[in-house]
Image (cartoon, rainbow, N blue to C red; front, top):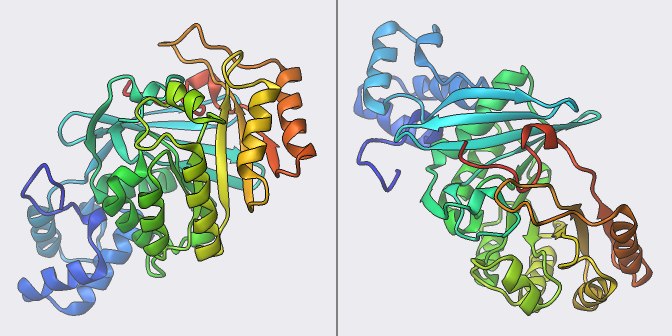
Length: 345
C-alpha cells in the first residue's frame, strides 16, 4: 500500500493472494481472482471495463474497491533510432518517464522507481529537483505493463535505471520484480532484469538476500572517493572500494552478473589516471564495466562528453589491465531519452 494514501493499492500492485482475499471477502469464487490477476499482469489490461470475461457487476465492484489505474500515459515520443520515451501522469499530478530501447531483437525497458532522485548526479536531469517521493508498487509495475501494451509484445529486458534510486525504494521495487517474474503474469526471467543503484553496501546485500535472481549495476562514475563525491554528491555511500566489494559479494552470492556503470565526462573523470584507479579497484573481481559517454543535459551545458579518442583510450586501459569493458553507444538523445536525460517534463 502506498504511504501517501489509505486507499488500496491499485490492481497492478496486487498479488494473487491479495486478490484471493478480496474475492473471499466479497463472496466471489476463487477462480475469479486468477482471472483478474491474469487480465492485469499477463494481458496488461488496466481498465476493468475491457475485461469482458468478468460480469459487469463484478467489474464495477473491482473498480470501486481498487480505484483507477496508478498511471496514465500522457505522451509517447519516438526517436529516429526507434527509442520510445513514455511520459506518465500519477494520481497526485506528478509525472515520471520510462524508455524502451530497441537493439536488434532486443527491446529493453528502462523503468523509474521514484519521482525525482535524491542522488543528484551532476550530469543527470532526474535529480535536479531532488527526491519528491517514492513510487508505489503499482506505479512501478504499470510502466512495464503500459509499454508492453503499446508495443503489442513483451519486451525482452528490464532495467531499473530510470528516475530515482531503486534501493532507496527497495520494498516496492522487489515487490514489482516478483510480479513481473510471476509465471502467471508476464513471466519475465530474472536473468533479463537489472537493478541499477548508487546505494549503500548494506542495501546491495539486502537485495542479494531478497533472492530475486536479477543482475546488479553500480552507478559509480568516479574512480576514487574524491571524484565520486563531486560527481554523485547525494550518493548514500561515496566509498568506491566498499561499493565494488558489495558488488563482488552480490555476484558470488547470487551467481548473477555485477556491472559498474561509469559516465565519461570530459576533463573530469575520463583521463588515463582515472582508468588506472578504476582498474586497480576492480582487478581480480568478476565485474564488467559499462562506459557511457555523457549525454548532454540542459541544466549543465558546461559538461561535455569525452572525445572518441579519449573514450577509446579509457576502455583500452581497462582492457590492458584485464578488466572486462564495453564502450556504449548513445541512444534516444534526440528525444532526451538517453541515460541521464529523463526528467519531470
